[in-house]
Length: 323
Image (cartoon, rainbow, N blue to C red; front, top):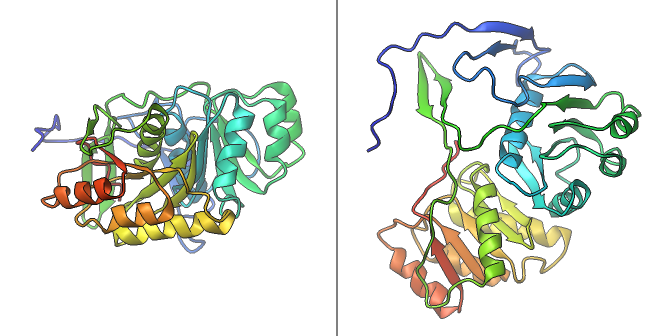
């Protein structure tokens, strides 16, 4: 058990910054309050809105989820979010390439989504963004040409944060439940170190994709499964009550975009496998390597299954549940 650095008494002086149009649904009222525990972190709450309609409760949640995910990467990256889950994430040599690769993961779900980039938005990328109906674009900066292009879609909310948040910074997160508030330290790690547990080790490209997939998986609601290939997600299964269902859903949605696209990909899981069925599903889909925390009493069953299929498997020792 981790001994938390949490005060016995936590006093919050929350300053209301903005009345929102409504909450998650139109019959709910909502407002944005400044959190003194993390008031300066670059992100949706502190961004400068340069155009677009007023931000809603859901816009802020989704924009925060997208920006926190894209901030994990040092390379140019793009994350597209719907209902706080990434529906596409990718790395690229430039923002435009990253966006196109992220969009290709699930172009249907991206409709009405939030796009986050970790680089200055340029005109070439803005030209592509305006082809799709989007709710929010959140970036550290945008050049004048890009802003002019986006102005042709005046309802799109464009948020400029000025900089990127540090994904490794320490902070506290707060969440209310009936009658109380849950407080925890933020999940500010991804892959501390990896351990190859199968007979076959991942190739260098597989390892790069495994670490990318596991980082994205951290930002997907549990149970979470992410398939990735060549620095881009190719299938995401989120929020299922069974891990095997998340694996099957990710493969099904990928096949809807392009059959057999998962062939040669890698799989990431936010938590361990209690049974080898998820390894079997990954193999059936065409994945060649898996990254997961490990720690199940039946880890060996999953390792044996991976060895049978000639797959590589890596343990991280770090779980990333996201509720």
